[in-house]
Structure formats: structure tokens, C-alpha cells
Amino acid sequence: MTDLQLVWFRNDLRTRDHVALCEAALVGPVVAVYCFCPDQFEAHDVGGNRVAFTLAHLEALSGGLAELGIALRIVEVPDFEAVPEALAVLADELGARQLWFNEEYPINERRRDDAVARRFAQADFAVTRCTDSVVAAPGTVLTGSGGPYTVFTPFRRRWTSLFDRAAAQPRARPARQAPLPVVADPVPALPSSFTVTADLDAWAVGEDAALARLEAFVGDRVLRYEKDRDHPALDGTSALSPYLSLGVISVRTCLDAALAANEGRLDSGEEGIVTWISELVWREFYRHVVAAFPHVSRGHAFRREYDDFPWRDDAAGLAAW
Image 1 (cartoon, rainbow, N blue to C red):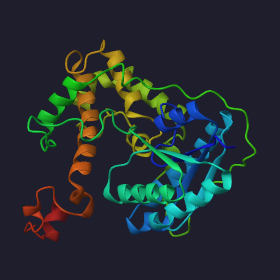
Image 2: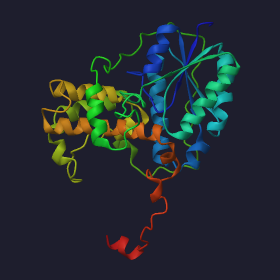
Image 3: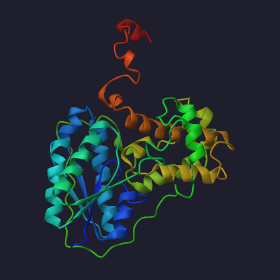
Image 4: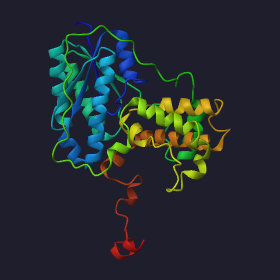
């Protein structure tokens, strides 16, 4: 297994259009890994609904990877601090000398990933970090003076001017590889410290379910999106947020479907489609903001002068509202 590639999954729980997976599969046979960190979830008030949805999609991912001949190893450690050593130990156990993963931009995730890169460098293992959760990587959409944008509308104009549809095409799943002597790990059960309060049956699990929602939305409701999205009583949104959040579907797949329905146009054509595309670009903007201004990941206001803003404390008024 000298050419074994280790692909680390995080909030990108899919096999289609997964940049790190696709790139690694071109180099050599792949083993996948996911690090389950329940204490990290608790420390950051991640709810039981999201954790349960994540575990359900880990199960689906494991099945999807198995169809490709890839085993999913699951490493359970308390928090991000324990991840670098756990991944290095697994890589050594497997005989993998290269780790692949898709970039994440919040500050804790970036610190974790930097620590992993340092630990792998100590072991003389290679690390490849890929751009996947955004079409344009942070640092590539800049103002005339070379700085990051702080206002969305000019960011969108610049993002649109730089957009290359060919480069943003979704990638197909890798071809099935010859099976390796690596056994997949079982997906952990939901820890007792987390409580599920939502009806998760309302949210079908898996990449195919996410793609079906996208097709249903783009095939009909997106044309009324500009108006219907503001009315909670209407089924007017894409209902893709949970899937995008966990990376069960990629932003490129969503954007490609929207462009196909709008004759390739980004900022003209069907009003509903243009509005939804703009919302996808908002998603990009927030990732650029969190990368350029890490303090927004630490409970601070974007403009630091508002950290001590004198909010009104009016329980009766809030209840009346």
C-alpha cells in the first residue's frame, strides 16, 4: 500500500463532486476517514438534530464509498485537539503517506487543519489541501486595492466578473477501485448527551435525496423563488440548507443546475433563478469574510466597535413581539 491515499471527510459528506476525493483517486487507491468529536460539538452548542443528521449521512457516505471500493474508517476522539495525532496514527497504521482534505474556513477548523499539517510534516507525510466548499477560494476575490470585500454587492459583481463556468463544473464520482484489505468502521451511535427534537424523517438521507430536492426545486419552484421565499406558509425555498451545510451536495452542483435552467446566465434571465444564484454567492461571501476576519468566528461583531452594543433587555416586549 505504498501509494495509499488517505482522504479526510469533514463537512463534505458526499462522493460526487468532492475535490479531495477526486484528486486523491487520480494518484492512488483511497481509504477514507472521518473524525467524530462529540466534545467539540458540545463545546460549540451543536444541537442533537445536527449531530444525528450527520451520523445518518456518515452511514450513507460509508455505503456510497463502499460502492467505489473505498472503506470509511471512523476515528472517535473528544475534540479537535486530539485529531492530528489520531490521523497520524491511522495513516501510519495503513501505510498511507499522503493526506487529502478540503479546506474549511472558520478559525477553529483552520487551527485544527494547520495542526494536522504540522503533525504530518513531522512524520514526513504529505498533505494536500483542496478548495471545495466555494467556487472561488478566499483571497481570490479582492477589491481594487487588493483587500477583502466587506460589502456584498461589490463582492458579487467582482465574483461574477471572475466566474469561469468550465472551471466550476461538478466532478463525477471516481471510478470504482480494486478492493483493499481495509475494513470500514461502524458509525457511532448518537451520544446520550445529545437530544433529537426534530422529525428527522422529514429530511431524507443521502446524496440522491439532496439531488432529488435540487431537481424538484430548479424544475419548478425556483421560478417563483424571488417572491415565494419570503412567505413561510409557502413551499418556496430550495430546502437544501441542511445538505449544503453538511456538504452532502456541492455548491457547484447547485450552481450548475441553476445555470442550466437559466440558459447559462448568472445575473440576467429568470428573476427567481437570478435571485437564488445571488443567495449562493452570499454563501461564498460569508466564507470569504470568515477567512479574512477570523474574529467573527469568536463571538465578536464584524465591526468591533459594536461588540459592546447596548442591546435593549425587554422580556415583555420580546414576548409581545
